[in-house]
Image 1 (spheres, rainbow, N blue to C red):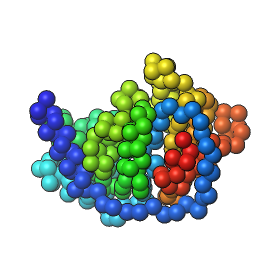
Image 2: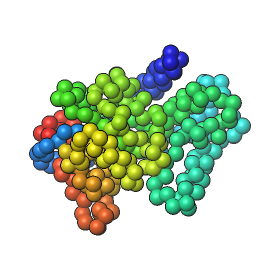
Image 3: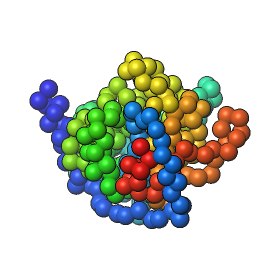
Image 4: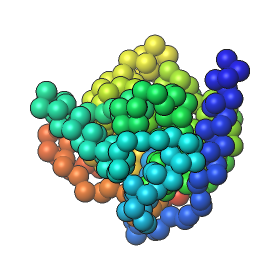
Amino acid sequence: MGASMSHHQSLVDLAKQSLSRFSPIPAGVSPDLNRLHGVKCVVFDVYGTLLLSDRSPAAGDRNAALREILESLEITCEHEKPASAFHSLLQKKAFSARLSGASSPEFDVRKLWKRVLGESVSDQNIEKVALAYECAMHRVWLAPNVKSVLSQLSALGLPLGILSNAQFYTPILLEALLGMPLSEFGFMDTLSFYSYECGESKPGPLMFDQLVGRLERLHLRPNETLIVGNDLNNDIAPAQERDFKTLLVAQDERSLTMDSDGGSLGDPIEPNATITSFDDLFQII
């Protein structure tokens, strides 16, 4: 247990060292602060919602960046272009899964890194490589006012959850930026769903359907639960199909997705409310 906790803390420390602050770019969207009554539970998306997310191409060569990470951990790799080998394997796995009928396949990247780097690399080093490479390729930072809003929600006693396209390092990034584990803010493991664990990403139905089942055990209904996200297709549409209340977070133009394919019946997707800052959340609930 001690070694596990020590490794977890080393990952949190690595995330803190690897992350750098940046600010949202206004999306030019007007808030729609409809009051939503009867909310007893709040479930958040992560990337683009709790975390600002910048997936623009990283500066420099991703293979060079990965080789630097491997050298720092004293890991040798037979691939001349290890990052290219990783992404090629990911694409092949996704293509094969779609041929088998999966519409939104998701994989645990640790298993893919193990295949690329070799079985001799320890599981702990695999996690360090995956986390460091993610931080090098994908900028994230805590969205403004998130910590204070989560603290206020926790003080109200509202159970909180997560439903996100994510990897094992996602809660580590959140812990590093929030300064404490998610459980300290009232996030419940039973209401937290990460796509790498489920094997399916949003907008696939699996995580939403599992959430409905978990809520039933807590005697909560979807229409008493608020889904908070930044993407009409991935967050709002599948939530509305299951009668969840929905809140669109339009805080940053880099991650806001307003284009939609329409709901299951092809109707326009309209969230119940829209905010441009987390400070607005308490005007909604």
